[in-house]
Amino acid sequence: MNCKGVVRELSDFLDGELAPDLLKELEQHIQKCKNCRLVVDTTRKTIEIYCDAEPLPLPEGVHQRLQQALANKLGRQPS
Amino acid sequence: MPVHLENEATLVAEAKEGNAEAFTVLVNQYERNIFRLALNITSNKEDAEDVLQESFLKAYTNLGRFQGNSRFYTWLVRIAVNESLMKLRKRRSDRQVSLDEKLETEDDGLLPREIVDWGDNPEQHYAKTEWQEILAEATQTLEPAFRTVFTLRDVEQLSTEETAEALGLSVPAVKSRLLRARLKLRQRLNKYFK
Ligand SMILES: [Zn+2]
Image (cartoon, rainbow over all chains, first blue to last red):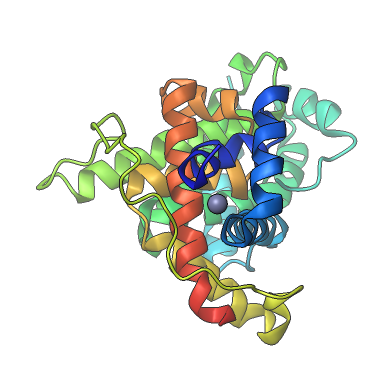
C-alpha cells in the first residue's frame, strides 16, 4: 500500500471496519512512513475532538421560546 | 450523542398518552444537541431555532408513529435533519443546494498537506467556549454535503447506515463524504496546533 492508499482507507481504518488484509498492509505502511502516521493520528484526534465536544448551552431565550411553543401546542389535548 | 435516558422508553410511552411533562423531559434532554445539529447544517442561528421548535412540535404530533425500533433520539435526529435541509434549500434556492449533487469522487486533492504532530491534547491550550467556537467555525467552512454527513456521523455519532438512511444517501456516498470531511477538518484544525 502506498500513501494514497492509506488516505483512501483512512476512514474505514479509524472506524475499525478495514478488511484484515488491508489492515495489515496499512499498518505495515504507517510503521515505515512518518507522514502517514501523523495523518492517521491527527485525523483520529480530529474525530475524537468532535465526538467529545459537549454542545454549547442554548443562546439566550431559545429554551424559553421553545417551551412557549410547546406549551401552546401541548396545552391542547393531543388527538 | 447525548446521554441515553434510562427511562426513555417509559417517557416516550407516557408522552404518547398525552403526558406533557414526560415529553418536556425528553425535550430538555435533547434540545442542545438538536440545536447544534440544526446550526451545523443550516449555518444560521434563526434557522436553527426554527428547526429546533418545528422538530419537537413535529415529534410530538407524530409520536404515535414512532415504533420504538430505533432510539427516540435517532428518530428525532431524522426529523431535525429533514427540517434543517428544507431550511438550507430555501435559503439557498438561488444556487441549488443538493445533497445528491455529484461531488468529486477522484482521489485528487485528498493527500494531506502540512503534516505536523499535534501533541497529546491540543485542545487544552484553549478555553472551553473558545474551543467550541473554533470547532463550530471549522465545520462551517465545509460544503453542506460534507458537513451534514460529518455532523451526523462524528458529532452525533450515528452509524454509517443510520446516516445514510437519514440523508437518503447510499452507504458508499456517506463514506466518501465522511472521509473528505474528516480530512478537510483535520487540515482546518492544523493551524491551531502548529
Ligand atoms: Zn505514507
